[in-house]
Image (cartoon, rainbow, N blue to C red; front, side, top):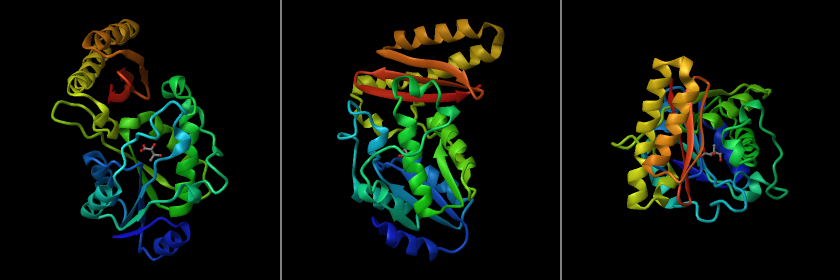
Length: 263
Ligand code: PAF
């Protein structure tokens, strides 16, 4: 596995890769969900490039950019074991030569949901993902379904590019209790972890009610919100149906969790 943090070197290494190239963009702090993304893209490409970059423009000043978990050595070992061919770990100056500022605006899929409490987020994601697409020139790229709105936002920006990039959804990987794996789960105390594990179960219950009685959707969603509060979540940012999925964001102390299930 080759590793580089320099764009000029990356381009040389990328052009030496044979066949179709798949991309797995990450912010590091890897878990089994990231390995599954590598496996997903590997099925559609001959070679895999992974990137590790904690992107400052998708964090608001009060958010967790500084404390976001970082562990380059373990991440590289995990990518090596997963069979990644090339890892790009750019310095911020490679992505943002003129300083960290947003240059790509997200499209209509960014409206509502995450944007209600994180209005900066998708423009930051679109800016970094566009730079990573430019630098790595992939044929196909994978984004996890756990961040379902992000997946939809990225499908929109990929569709506007001159060179097509196929965007592939990566299935959500969960622990034995149904909690979607996330690098931010490491922030949870044992007690918060117990509560977090009820999120998926309650989403599935509400999704079942929505399927059984579509005419009563508003009531099912209201009941679902109350159930999340009763389970111990401090706040429910949203519980909403879009793209034939039920999507939720909740907070637990200082930690914000998102999840979604198909309807
Ligand atoms: O989903 C993530 O980990 C990040 O938002 C991404 C797509 C790597 C952009 O920084």
